[in-house]
Length: 125
Image: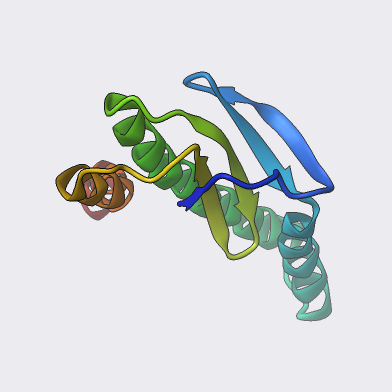
């Protein structure tokens, strides 16, 4: 979660989720490239590499949910989100401003991790 600023250069627009533009930074492609190369060099089968790529996609799906949690909680308090950018190290929801009320800021901060509770519960069941 960050506030203001310009969108990172060289990002690919994936679409819009809940009215929020979703971008993929070019460095993100290092992860699937590394997954494929390390699998090939390690002697993994194509099926194994495919499973690893699906796992990676799932992890970043949860990153999108996490950032949407921040963004939708902020929207509840009248704060718009400029966009969400996915990076190899996670994601960034760029809010137009920080909540002025400390309780609202706490809600926005906790909404990201809270958004991952349901997927975690499903996976652990």
